Image (tube, rainbow, N blue to C red):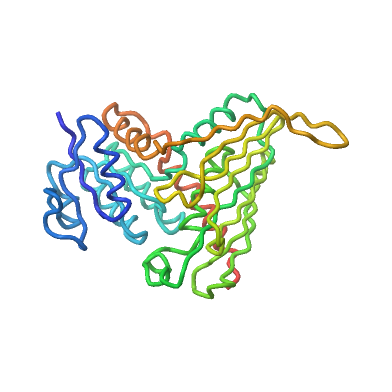
Length: 331
């Protein structure tokens, strides 16, 4: 039996999700919803959002729309008895996320998963395994830098309009790094931030410097999220009691963030001059994350298991951190 799927929003992400679904056995996209293309796209019916949500044959809906539509479409789909996979951000605020969770509770056990795709990169999976193995002890601190460059054309897009996007670089890109901090290190209850629009001077932020701390574990993490990084950059550093993990670069369709290389080493420091030995570097040559992510979602549906990675509680905790970051905004 083939499981029927509908995709709402068929831009770049909708196409990527479709390609990943095609790699999953007994699962088929039977309809899409995208107002910018024709009624029939490469043999697939192009329906309205409402027609997708109420389609009697569709069991799961993939939401790949501009941010402001994520919450209402997710709630409507859950109420219509559909499983839902939605791209990030899940909503604009933690309070929004609480409304979504209420709809999830009332859905009769429908699966809800969010597209925090970076968790599914092979390099991140390896980092998570190392943390859970306790081979290097507990995490002491983490540092993330995630930046890109934009041109003035960017501000013609919905992403640059606060009422449609919910914010600037933090909710667009920095949210991924914050999610990785929480994936690897747990929740953070203290958030301090400097959020500014110093360069572009728009109503959305172009830079954010964020410090997070968990009072119980003592873990501290710092993030610089920026759209004035003239040379695109992804860097995640995790330092533990007995060693470290440093991930530089991230495989993307454009490779604008460079090669994805994870370096891991045990602590071999010797005073007074600290030296690092036995560092092992692994370069990841392919991006399997889209397939892994979709498989996790559909496995949960077919086997009636819990969403373990990117569930609604993960999203709620993350959005509460985002709330605290934006509460520190200085413009």
